[in-house]
Image (cartoon, rainbow, N blue to C red; front, side, top):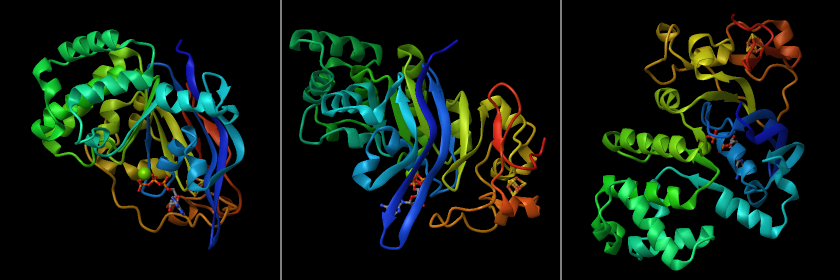
Length: 321
Ligand SMILES: Nc1ncnc2c1ncn2[C@@H]1O[C@H](COP(=O)(O)OP(=O)(O)OP(=O)(O)O)[C@@H](O)[C@H]1O
Ligand code: SF4
Ligand SMILES: [Mg+2]
């Protein structure tokens, strides 16, 4: 059985604003195993990016303060990290990939310089070893060595993606957080990039937290999935559990009803109403105002977590089994 690389244990965090306290993350509970791709889906504003910021310890800079729980990386509490360990955690153990993979490249430097910098930042190799390592990675990704002398603007989109892939491999992170990594890309090259990330994950036994709005992409990439709503994880389980038998009314509403029997081929259906106001800690279920199945109890008391076996769980009083 795989080891847990990351554990987010009942983690809550708030942000003070001029308009009052925002309860941005509430009792978030999930783990990411070594060598797996863990997906997070949910509507805009539900807390996907803030969860990743908290994991990487960037939350503090954004004014996000922990109010409960803990985040463990290989069993170590990330909040206990001193300056040196934090630098290593952010610079070596983890890597965040944002919307545009090209953001990882600096237009002013050659590809060679940037790849050498990646190995230098990671550490553990002399310059000669770094050059050798780079040569091997280029070969693996079918990138000719001539490209090393090029600047990013001289290369095609597909080639730049492979260079970013090479950077990821050279960085050797244990955990990649990919936050909507393909939204800024043309559809024609999205698939290629996703396949490359998947190849890297499998071959180098890297773990990925993959954040996306796109259910099709999530289903292609992820082994297990958490569905977030209003700063909470409302359902989680394996891809098969969630797509073949989702139990939370919100998860079910995310998938178009016609596709419930199999992997949905589409994105969200429109869900009537608005997400909850994060200024208030709801007494009842955060989805109650929009849920077709809500009863009085749903408005009065926060649901207890219900388990459906093998890690499949949902926060709902009336799961649709
Ligand atoms: N600097 C900030 N000040 C106040 N509120 C913020 C700030 N940053 C984020 N929030 C709020 O925190 C909540 C969670 O935001 P987050 O960015 O994690 O959402 P998300 O799920 O990643 O959404 P999206 O899919 O649009 O990227 C949102 O309601 C957002 O308005
Ligand atoms: S607890 Fe009630 S309101 Fe909330 S999702 Fe379940 S049925 Fe709907
Ligand atoms: Mg986001």
